[in-house]
Length: 333
Image 1 (cartoon, rainbow, N blue to C red):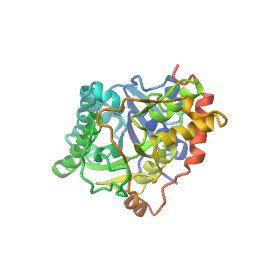
Image 2: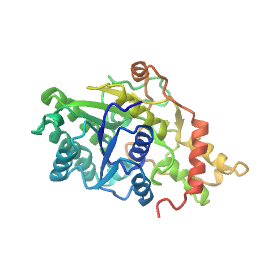
Image 3: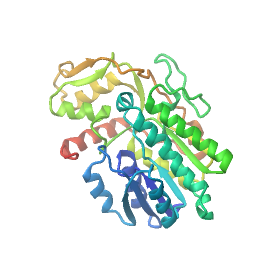
Image 4: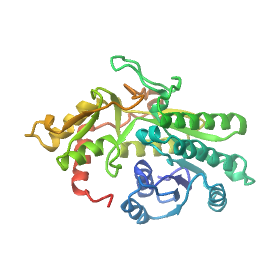
């Protein structure tokens, strides 16, 4: 089986989700070449870089999607038929402390990429598909007691500078399609977890603090709800969307695996220390500013288009994730 596209430019591919996508793509298909344009910020492990370097038909170019001359040169030399944009500042707390870098990377960087496609003198680049990896956070939140789900027609109501920057990029892409005929895919996914995720995120924080027997910080009362998807399942779904030929549309990727932060923390602590009371490690801290209450995704449009149920085996996958961190405590050294 061949992949629909032969030359794939991935941006931000050394990061958590991007590296799993590249790994899955190149381990599944032999007809694909990948160039990965990544600035390799604090969120990238050197071991991630080495892991990807071992893959066939792969090249890393270190640099920013905001660097117009580098983007232009890379597109001209490689002529990708698919661009997959993972490059983003993504930690909500950081966006609250300093929003500017989020606007620069997530909005202006995205615009730089799509501008260099639609305004290129190269006819092939004008036909390139641009796949934006976005987030469910662009829709804001719903009440924790509600049965409402986000769908592709839900209004965007971002709550943080991070989600606002991603919503802005989504709007830019859709408007570039209407005005400049950009070919695009947008996928808005729920919260990812799995191996190689930076320790600033919730699940790695819970696991690593628990393994060190340090306090596990939980915002507010811990009742905020997220829809959790295993990163390898997300990567597989992205590949399926691309290989299906879907384009010029947006799709939600969720698996109806809604977990409150406090339940998630308790379950992970009980898996790590089944005989130790979890209360000894949990520490409630001041709530995040503008903290969203609940994310919940209706994935029926995508499942219908793919004619496939999205995978969800949370119990096994969270155990696999805990096991990976136990065996890779030095991944970020």
